[in-house]
Length: 245
Ligand SMILES: C[S@@+](CC[C@H](N)C(=O)[O-])C[C@H]1O[C@@H](n2cnc3c(N)ncnc32)[C@H](O)[C@@H]1O
Image (tube, rainbow, N blue to C red; front, side, top):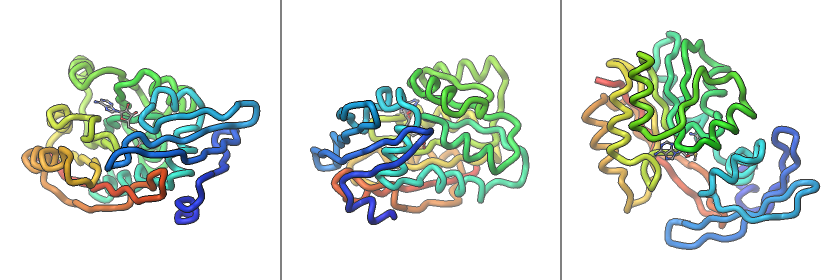
């Protein structure tokens, strides 16, 4: 199904009761910047969406999953979660899910491990709205704002974390190396941090990896398929897991 999805310009899929049709349109730029799809469902005329337009995508139940998981064949959220759990002892998790989007990470973890608390965090209020709409009850709290605001709020709540997951949201214009450094400090010594960064030469990956090696003992550093680009080319990410010093 995976390679078929890459060859097919159109995917029909049902998510959260909606029959979506997703068609790849175009991409521009050397790294596929400007990736665009056309989307429709019964009663909804086709319209165009950029893959970077999270706020618009999150408005429709299951649309993120239809585009990223079904049309572009990504299962990165599962891979990052599995990699994190492989490094964790079998103890109740206290998790910070960074850049949590529509809550796929939280839902995946909640079905597999005992959770003491699970906090979602995203820069976009639309992510929180979508998570409460599509995955209500998964997170104990979902904080919207900047990394600075997150740190302030967590300190006032005296919450500690033995696990932080930052999937597909670090580097390349998302979470900056400085923000990443601050986030790592929220995890207690011995806690596990799992994240991934896009595997392209001209990004901030080297700085992010340098920061991580200063605060954690690296246990996994592995390049993997992330998803197809809308033209069928392959996008690779590097997943890194480590234990906080
Ligand atoms: C590709 S989605 C990944 C969602 C989720 N982690 C997953 O794997 O399914 C990236 C998310 O990161 C969020 N994000 C990007 N930069 C951020 C920042 N500086 N602070 C908080 N969230 C950020 C975006 O708003 C978006 O919801």
